Length: 119
Image 1: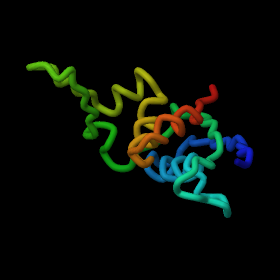
Image 2 (image 1 turned 180 degrees about the vertical axis):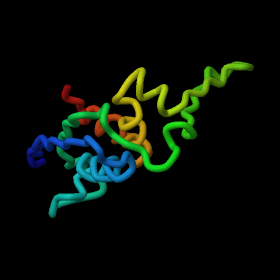
Image 3 (image 1 turned 90 degrees about the horizontal axis):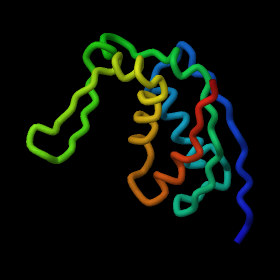
Image 4 (image 1 turned 90 degrees about the vertical axis):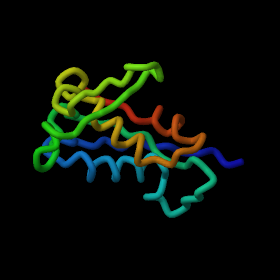
């Protein structure tokens, strides 16, 4: 089995739209930007994100977009607005967008480990 050479791609996301950046990051993590892409193999590169706190949403999404989580207990549904999530953890919004753009299979967690944030 050939050794996979992973490069580190640095992306500055200041002033860029969440969705457009997240799709680009997901493609790099999957390895679709390479000529030797194979769907059944994890050939993607590492991604380092700069300025995650300066990312933008278009329209009124900061005030209207809601993230949900649950404890699976009665009354256990929690809601967080995008602007509150961004203030608490600037990486959460982008990390969440990238995670849900990756395929939902056993490689998702491995690919997410290669996503890092640089201060």
